[in-house]
Image (cartoon, rainbow, N blue to C red; front, side, top):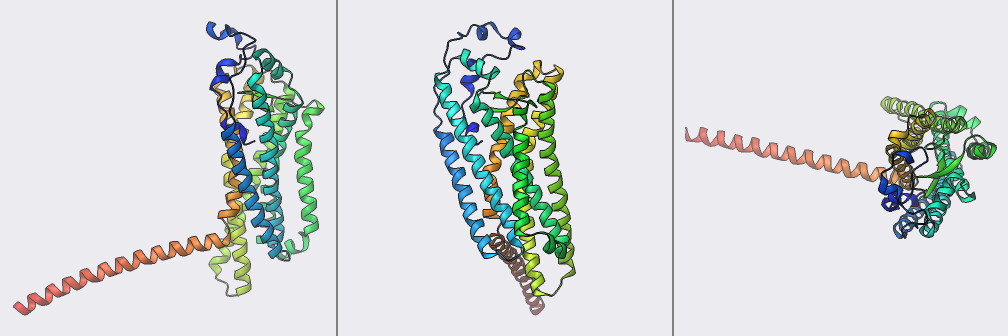
Length: 381
């Protein structure tokens, strides 16, 4: 999903014809473009470089999580680390597979005629169908996993005894398999005539048909996709809020048990990471979910023709932001670990103490100066 965000679409805007619905209002010079003209040459070097960096970030985060899982295998944190490792592995696969397909489609488009490109949009090939399915699958999986992680931590923080009795490694693996199967089932629905995948502007990526010739099944499919994704984000928000308030309430009680303080420290670290995942997912995925739903609704009702270019731009912006989620997720685990948070806390504490000591020293110097002045005046008198 990463490679699509770096493509130069300026040439494609002028080269590709618009849909049949908007062809009537095109300018004469746009209509005069020869149907056998070819797409401008492409150089996806920047996309490949960014894709390589994204893979590197995910691999680093996966190594960190694997080491942490081996260290905490028998503790309550092991379940969280298993979920987190699965999330990063899914992000890595979602970074490589769709990115490689987009690079292939973009490179193949360099010699493709406009007539062939228009035909591909109306009758997408197997690559487009597979890419569209990957977009839905790798879009839902991280959101489902983030929701499951938040629910697991909420149970562990609020009901630790019940969590210890219900949550096991075997059940966690079963839950992971069910999450992947659910996302796969949703992604395969267009192959059973519920919705369809098609090329999207600037015709280098594929997604649900939301812009042109949108049917009732397409609208139902995008509503299902967006509804599941937004519900996962909302559930994660509720669970993380409950966990956060519970941890704050426990800290205010100031329990003296060192073992309980250690467990609470691990809980705080995990909840902070979950909040980071939730915020990242909300920022990155909400635009695509909302814009896709709005585009499908307006296209189905027939009121999109005047704003088609605007919604095309919004969809491109949304998919670029969604792509960033797979790059930012690894940094949540790299930067929001307890060791890093402890260093940040110590640095902040040192700076605060330094400023306080400087203020006290300055205040003492001023008082001393004032006292010395009073003393000298009294001596003169």
